Image 1 (cartoon, one colour):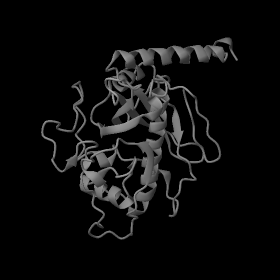
Image 2 (cartoon, rainbow, N blue to C red):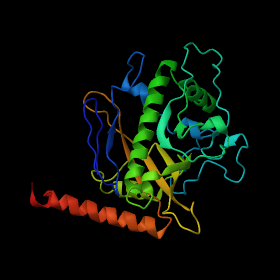
Image 3 (cartoon, one colour):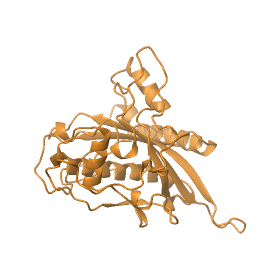
Image 4 (cartoon, rainbow, N blue to C red):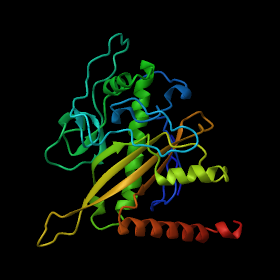
Length: 301
């Protein structure tokens, strides 16, 4: 299924898609209080800068070799929050030589998070939902990674970062609402894995060599794994039992629209970690095929 979000209207399907969620058009009405800048300067970095403690790993040598997760999960930096691989204390201080004053206020997302003790505390929020990094924190992360970014582009990058993640959660909830208790789903933890292609992304790249008009010929610019929990119907023996699902999200860039607005494509689906996830993906693929035929796609309409 595909959905677009523009300045004046939006449309979406009520069911998830087993394929890419389609182009996400960044709304030009996003709240920004700074001059417009060229689209080319607001393209996202090669990965989300908030989720890595080391510079990007070089691509594998030509001729093969499996992608490797860039995070050493056996020797994680103790200063990193294990729920999101973000530094436990994101600095709000200006960088040496910084020319512009960047906002330090954080934006609260609509993505629920579990209550209870917060490892890393301020690294991901203290309320009932996750908090996005402030523009100053985002810029500090970029500088820490060694990326040169115009200071006047940071606020737009943060807006895009936040917007895309809101849309990712919207797609996750399409899947969750199909399951018991899914309407109360929460994002428990997440991690960025830009150095590791998902099996689906790898397969599409291979197919793209032979069918470039149908499959992706460029890899995703980022990948996230989101662990989502939902309460199961109450039981007399285990009243607080929860189910957990890992979602894989591949983020793709697409050509700008006719007005020059950046366009992104999200592929959001549950990982094939359980029979339930396998079953749901099969069901959605069948529903998508059935709906396409019901809409007359096979009748030349």
